[in-house]
Image 1 (cartoon, rainbow, N blue to C red):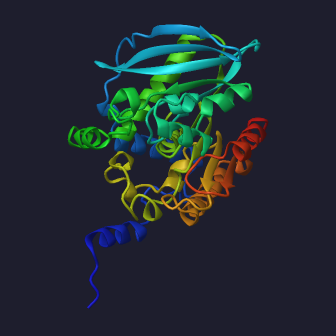
Image 2 (image 1 turned 120 degrees about the vertical axis):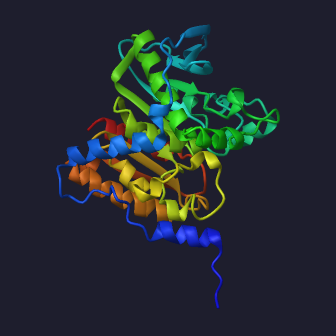
Image 3 (image 1 turned 180 degrees about the vertical axis):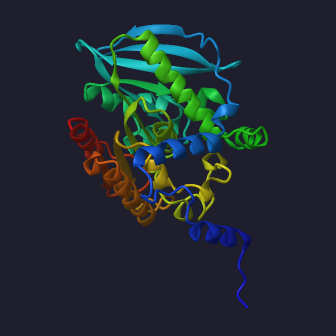
Length: 338
């Protein structure tokens, strides 16, 4: 008799489950969105995360560089938790500026997004994967802010430079929280700070992007925070059955009970009618192309239900688990212009 291993058994449950909050077309799309977004907030345990009454916005320095002005600031997103971000503003630009929040994935920290290697392996990470998001954003005429996410770099990474999500993420679960919820909360706090403290930020053009774990945070943040006008998650949007349920992934990716309510394609419908650029690599072996395309088909159908079928796009690069700046940025501009 064939033996089924526990992980296979549980994966098959996910594969054979139709999420209960999948849009059926039986109610107005906006009504479904309101119901689904409330359910996602509950699953992310966002209500368990207490917002700090005073974020204690503190500018640590301002530097003038040839191509940009750089501000480093800290925020207290919940009582006792403080994290840094770095904002760059292109020189010579006047008026309101589109601004993009940049989120690195599992790496040595947010200096990767800034294109500033600290560890020797950072050079390969940046040069081999277009992960210096802020460098490219400045060239594209955007203001940009790199956020140090929880359990990476200065916010809990290992002394050797690697991320360290396990203990914090498991503690979050037994505290009735989730790491993704915590990261979404921090992203919203950064958006608050941009709006409240930098008058050059175009509040109608606040966007978010990231690769891998940064793409995951981007995707969930955009589903929750409707101030995000465009999201560009890379190497993150994929069916659960083909990605985090099919192989070992960092525990920070997991949200208890979510597969009973949503797959990632369903969550993409919460971003509509705002713009969405999904980026992936054809040879990505941890977020496989087939699962990405299955998710995007659902996303496309939901954008059609929202009346904006052309406000989402899939960009597929020729390699693996990395960002593809030259392919993705033109599509971002194309969607932005609609």
